[in-house]
Length: 197
Image (cartoon, rainbow, N blue to C red):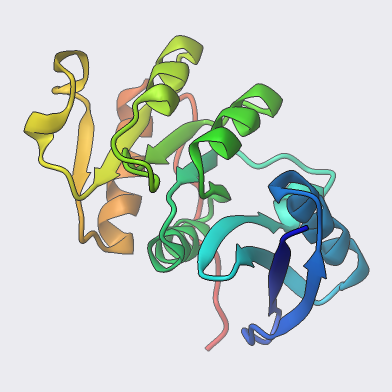
């Protein structure tokens, strides 16, 4: 069985590695992350990795009773890029779910429909558009966040929202707010999270 690492972000902003566990698969690891959040009241979120591979993340919104105004699905296999986007979006007040592989993203879409998605088109196995096609079928707006040139996109998505890597958290937050507002205000931008000085 593969070995997974669980990195918890605590309310004092530290991020210790809490545990390493051998589990059956990525879904079992993400369930373990939710259990860690329940058992660690000071934890704000848990990032799951398998070696250097980013598996996904869980935060308080995944296990809390309340529902956020807007949930953003981030589909990105690079841990650093996924974490940059997650932190920026959460600081802007959004709930964020991260998935590091196409199969994980498709399973997530079977489980819950996000308000909007940010997707990389190369998740380690070359370009793939299965997540974009599923989002389109579900009526979920999305933004391509990729190192590929726009000309690589299939003709049906050449006019889609697109951000070229490298990208900053601020650019992503602006793109999310703009796209949600253009969709008719169905999911207004939340108030930014207050941070302690």
